[in-house]
Length: 96
View 1 (tube, one colour):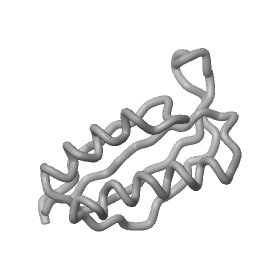
View 2: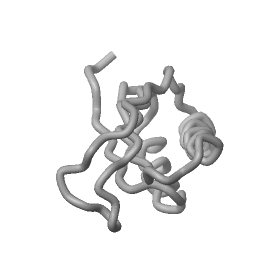
View 3: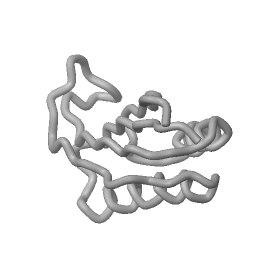
View 4: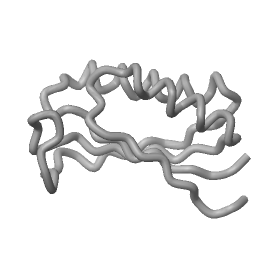
């Protein structure tokens, strides 16, 4: 397994409950594929460099996790189906 970090930008008008639901779904996508999720960190409301789907702000989250390449592929497919996500990017961390 390798270390990764998911950088997730959610719509600014999502309630805290819906944000929690999206975060829970992301965590379950990783763990269902055999990965391990570390503690998610919130960056709060940030201003975007350019509008995405009409939004100029987003709620920023970073989620470090350990997973196989197959789990990352599964996560990327599953993220397309989640509502409330403006942008998501997975970056690979240092090798463990």
